[in-house]
Structure formats: C-alpha cells, structure tokens
Length: 343
Image 1: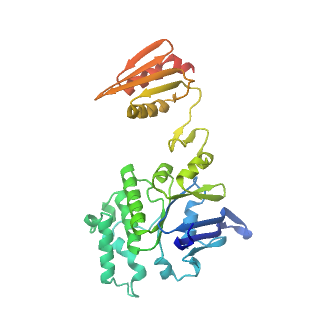
Image 2: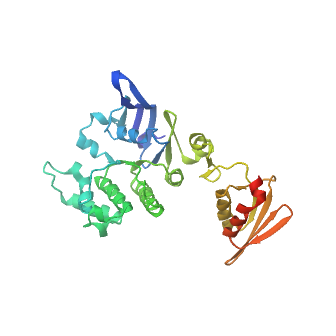
Image 3: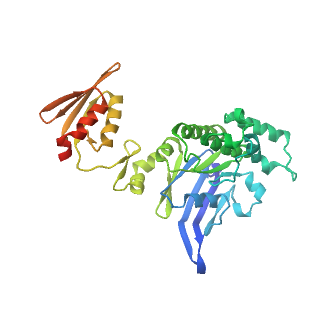
C-alpha cells in the first residue's frame, strides 16, 4: 500500500457497546483497515456481525471501545463537526422522514458544511447541486417530493445529497437494500463511475455478495470477531467466502462466484451442448435437486442441441433415451421419474 494515497485509517479499533457494571459487548476487535483514495470497498458479513456499528463508528456517530479512526492522519473525534462533514459523507439506514421534501431541497442539504451561519446557499453551492442532479440523472425529479418517487430513485437522491457534500470519503449503509435488480445495478454503476472518475473513496455495507464481487476493489469480510480485507478474487481463491457463508443448505461456488442450495442423494447428470442453453438448464436442474457434474461419475447424460430458435434436450438415462423440446417438459419428467425418486 502506498501511504500517500491513504485517506482514512481504521487504527487498532475495537467496536461494540458498553453494558452495565463496565462490561463490554465487543462485536469486532483490533481492526487495522486502511482506505486508499479511489477505493470502492464493500463491507460483508452475517446479520448482527457489526456492519452498521462499524460504519457508525467510522462516521464518528458512535465512539469505539478502543482505538481510533484517522482521516488525513487526524482522529475524527478531535475534529470540528463541520470540518469532519467536509471530509466524510454518510448515508445510514433510518434517515429522518423526508416524504414531503422536494428532491432539490434534499440534495441542497449536502452543502451545509460550506454554508455561513445563516445557512445561505452561495452561487457555487447552487452550481454544485445542479451538477450532481445532472450526474445522477435526477434533474427531471428536481421539484418532486420524495413521497412521489420509487424506492430506487429515493435512494439515489440520498446518495446525491452526499455527492453534493463533495467529501473525499463516503459511507453508505445498505444503499441497495430492498431495491430491484435494475435499480441495484444502476446505483452500483453510479458509484463505480464516481470512484473511477473522481477518485473518491466509498465504503458501503451490503448483503449482496455477488454484487460486491462485480463492483468492489476490496472487500472487508467479517469473520468471527475481526475483518479480513482483500480483493474479491483473492478472498474467493483463499476460501474465505466458503468458510464464512457455507451452511448445510447453502454453499458458495468459487468457480462461479455464486451461491447455490445444497442437495444430497439426488441424480447426477452430465450436460453438454450449447453454452447458453447449458447454463440455464443447469440452473433449472439444480433447482429441483439434480446435480450437474462434468466428471466421469454420473447417472445419465443430457445432450443439448440448439439451432436458431429450436432447442432439443436428449436425455440418456440407463437404457432409455427421451427427447424434450423445453426445459419445463424435461423438469416435469425428471420430477416424476422413479429413478430420480429412488436416488
């Protein structure tokens, strides 16, 4: 790591809550986590592992049990609140009710660290708000109240507010939670573009490992009471996702970067043919508990042919051969098959 690029440092940090009689409920301890300029970092971990608490501590909202958070080499708790707001922008869950506030007003709130004591907007503040509305595609919603917007647009507005704040470091707590897939992709693409073009550093918590694998420069992965920090690829290759997330029913497939439900004692099929059709056929087979294998140990073979809009699935099972013209018919047969039920 080049220390000249370091904009934030989590230094020997222990987080959690103080209980009665000086007892401490420790969530994560002895964290050493540098953040470089232009990093997009995804914070991952099981429910209740401390993701939100860590972000609140880094934001200066909650004090650590031990250690500190440095921004530009200075402890955030020693900084004037207005100065800190010029260096660190935050969007946490549980924001105040903004239903009847126009988009333009919400985004303008991001300029508060630069306003005078009367809160007056300068020309450069108005220009910055206009710039952010254009960058985020929110110009057409400028005068709409938040209550009139979809969840995805409302979340984009809250991120736009932080962009108007124009800080080198941005913290986001579950920015894509409860959004549909297109809205998630749009927000992650916007953040990825922001990091690449402006060299801002973004730290966001998420439950979406597959989205993090596509987007993050680094992943902070919560394991037991600490955090492992590395590129998504190195974490996958070193087995961290499997050890953290695998259960008896769900497993992470490092060769594909996805999770799948685990089934045992089911039919094993070897599948060959058109790559795209094989991909979707494999997903369908695994959904009904059939294992797709590319090894020599299998119970049957499925050969797929695809020409233009016509597709055929030839199933060779024991001494029988059957042809199907859709995945639905194939699944219906396999679900009824006495051979499958006997495995």
